[in-house]
Image (cartoon, rainbow, N blue to C red; front, side, top):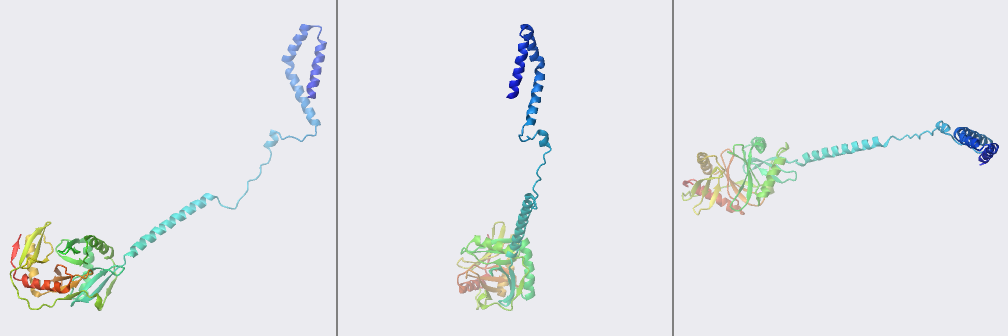
Length: 347
């Protein structure tokens, strides 16, 4: 403020000197305003600098000073950046998932650890497939030697892969599967008997899960509680001819069935591709009946079926299921009674 007061006093003194000539003073004043303004402004700045030099006020930072002001050094940390750790963690998680998946797959493969058992029964040798929980999934037909039963396991495995599973239901509503070879001409094995078709389908899947096992145990004998099949010893039977064989076509296959004199169905054969092959099959059936190659077997439902075998132990046919063993044996006697002299009817 002091600077402006002095400056005004100087201007006033100059004006008083030029009052004699009003026009010239006015012109000079206008000329001063236009020409000397820059000079006055410079003087003003110089005076301000002088006053600032005489003051004890702290020195202000100029732009130039700020430019050379040292910056603080960044803090240094020994820790690694976070993102690599996150990435490593992600990889560890993925690796863990992969390991878990592998363990699951391995455990899945270990889940189906069944076994085969070769054992003597009913004056022959057989094998059976067991699940890991000990459940019997399927039992083979008869073999004359232990070695033959073990060879039968390889045949069974091959036909699980290449053969045909069929489900049959008897007149009492009980069902079981039968495994045929690829051509459908030979029964390889019969499954257990179940009350519903759905349970039979589940049993087929179980066979497919466990059949590939290489574990085979040879038993010297079966526990008495596990003996399920025995040969039938026949009493003398009078052969009569008032029953009948029927050859019929169903679902593009030909079958043979034997009926007693009261029209009771005693058995139904496997399917044949043609009527001629069904007739040839009937000859084989009659020969096995004549040789009395019958056995009776109890299934897991405590029902009984008779089986008719060829001379080499191959299953030819299976009879109906019965709740009482004696009734099943009686049905086998009826087959022997009517089966040798019954006439053949083609339907």
